[in-house]
Length: 215
Image 1 (cartoon, one colour):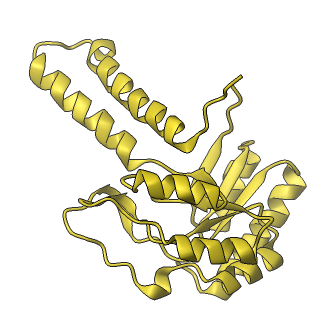
Image 2 (image 1 turned 90 degrees about the horizontal axis):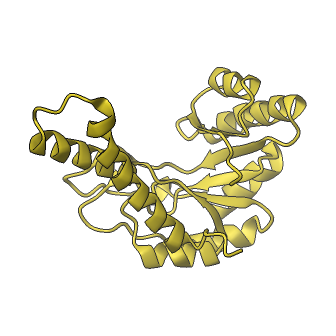
């Protein structure tokens, strides 16, 4: 099975450089907290450096702002219109930086909300039309409506980040194992169920994404 090593959410040039030098297959520079102009400048520097070290490395940029963190949110996170990726900015960003892929803000948040998150499919269509040759990435995939995910893939999403759902499965299995076997001290026995539960989530996502190799 081919596996790549991806560095997610590098927040400055130095952290991106560190993983590039370490031989990572892919690096994501998240400049969403900078101004649009500064985001372009640093991302362009990351792309230039990365390609000099390894022309095959995948460089992912980000335009738009994803709210939330890797946790289960008790309250609904309000997504503002200005948070969303604008098609014209996506086009300008890709043209000026040369990124291979682009992370979008199209309705999801980091973490899991009580109600399934919905993807702004209309905005995704507009972005795909603006940058048809760029790989599109969906962050905040945990807790997102399965049908929206499937539709987003049809509309051009090629990479989906899942984190919180895996952590929740791991944590719940660990709590249950310790509660049911309070005298157990062997780490390999305590941790075995956590890995099994995490694997179930991964297998389910592979099916939803249509990523299983049929050969």
